[in-house]
Image (cartoon, rainbow, N blue to C red; front, side):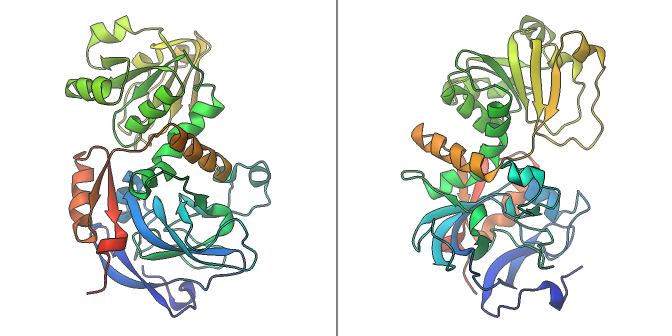
Length: 362
């Protein structure tokens, strides 16, 4: 259902965007309204926007949350074009980004603890009801207006195109590593799945000085994991011999898989008191026995995105270590093809839209 007039911003200076209008998920050009730049706001010219798997789920209404028309995109990179009178951290021309959040209550226990990503009133960057009643529109658009608190500064030397996916994929893997002690040099960590999240998890783990094992169903990814990404070991999860040999060798596992699977063989890879952190969202309930956790004092936990403070910290850490994502840049005219390829897993490892050069009025 299209947003009503009350759900549109009163500003009449419209932005150009790509929007999905139904569960086919196909996007087409559309004009959308953006709010006036308020006292605490930053207006941003979008130059690049990553395509996240969440975008695909949302435009196809697979999570039953779509408020059409949906303008996706929460891996936004661009330049500041205007700031409100209360904004002192950013200036016109600054290189900035916006990730998964556009607003929170900023007063609850989570917000006051600097963990806005767990605010019960979180407003996502797109397809979410903002505090003024409007529906948020994401970065498949030539401009966004965001409260300054939710704007991330791009460090010097960090390319906007390869850095954009870090605002979702990067912080999603960085946060659980930080908070679960999986960032200590010499520790052994497993990464399940070598996709958009998994390849970034390998890079961060290596930057932390950890020993990394990639766990995959695809034997053909071995060379890429070890030669290109620098993993120390590779285990084919369907090979019983390899799984047995890796049993009890890992301090932690970052599980990026979205496929439903039995947890038992993967939990067996953990050392006593090891931790598995879930990042993927399988459609079916997890298959797990209590014994596989209790017997070894193991932990199974989840993690969702990361705070603004941690996102800036992550970006600065990535720049220091010259860490970026592996991307394929596409034009606005090729976004539908990119979404179809993403659904098939045909990308290494993240699509990024060249918004600035290709999203133009007909």
